[in-house]
Length: 299
Image 1 (cartoon, rainbow, N blue to C red):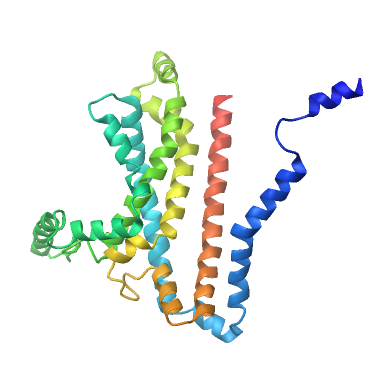
Image 2: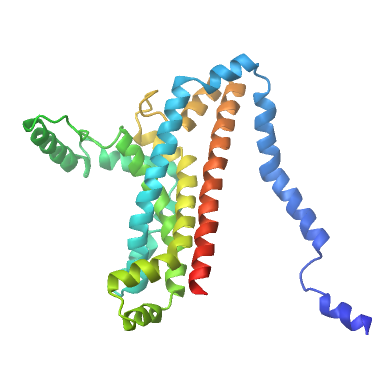
């Protein structure tokens, strides 16, 4: 009966050797070799030049701006993306399919078009920028009346707030599309069971619904955060690109490439790569922890 045993172990998919070889080749060509190229190119710099490049005040400022705003944008997207996904899944209303299709708009638009559109809308004389200026002027005047410094910029575009708007815009679909399947798979009877046991709606949400959706929310946040870190096209048009103030790291890398400083540009790329790996590793660890906690809760 050895032949029967071998037939049971056969798979309709190609053999492991073929698929593993193709996977290794594909990953090497697309990911590994380009990343190795970064390290090889940056090795042309001396240790002194490498130290100066890493400790450059413009680089440190751009890193703080890039990762700080990306983190804030990811958190904003988790909150409003959750509300949007919940609305699309749990409620029926006119225009729901249209709203569901609009969520994917940042995916379809070229990033440069997104940046130009946002800059036009949020400029001082734009459709959103004009009422914003009126609100900011009145709010700052009220703060000045109580001897407090002005907190609101006169316009959104060409400021850090404008960069944040762009990062939120390009990241929200990741959160919504990650949470939607999780919400659809979440049986409403679980909430009814919690209510039958005496839980209020708030208790059912915090103790039953939210723990079940936490892994998907963390995944959506990590995708949005990673997308924001590498964003360039939409940010470059809505930012004033002033070094030390509104210049993101990607723009600083482009400036070095335009000046034929390829070693310096790759060094900045390595710095971003290392920081991104560390932060995404932390987020993935949090995702693993939340998944394990959700499984334990289910059991």
